[in-house]
Amino acid sequence: MDPSIIILFVVLAALMFFMSSRTRKQQKQQAEFRSALAPGQEVMTGSGMVGTVVEIDDEADTITIESTPGTQTRWLRAAIAKRMDTPVEDTEDDETETSDAADDAGSIASADGSVDVPDDLSGLDTAQREYREGKRRENGETEDK
Image 1 (tube, rainbow, N blue to C red):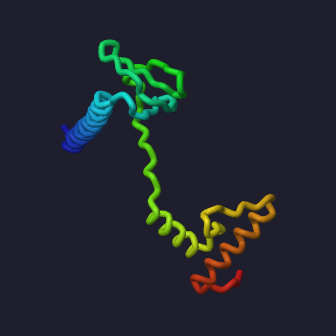
Image 2 (cartoon, one colour):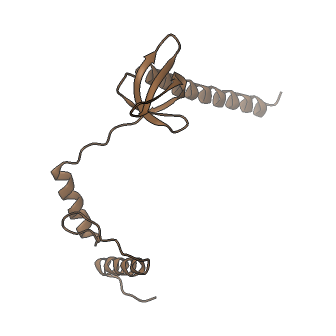
Image 3 (tube, rainbow, N blue to C red):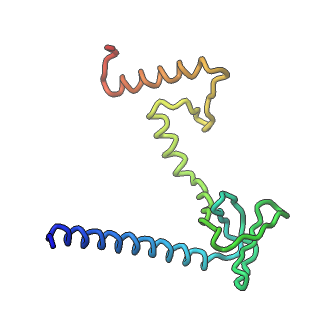
């Protein structure tokens, strides 16, 4: 038997092993996630429905989710895809950093944080052109085209 065929089989076997171990690791992580679900957590199903866990029935392996107040649906535990993290509240420091960075970039945001949106599309072209010209000036480029 040719040694290159043996090497090929060894490489294929190694690839299959690594791929299956990676899949098992992902499945284990998903199982741990689903077993750690608790009422009050916001989750998303595999089909994209977002809601809050209301009740968990371990015997039937189902989870009751409330998507809107008063609307409850039952789902298999395996249908829960991920936990939806609640957004972190902005602090005053974050807002000042964001506004400073926006001012440096030539943003159209005003000092109070509101954004000036043009009434029609013709203003968008002008704003984009002004933004590009400002970037060129910052970088010291000339307008040779």
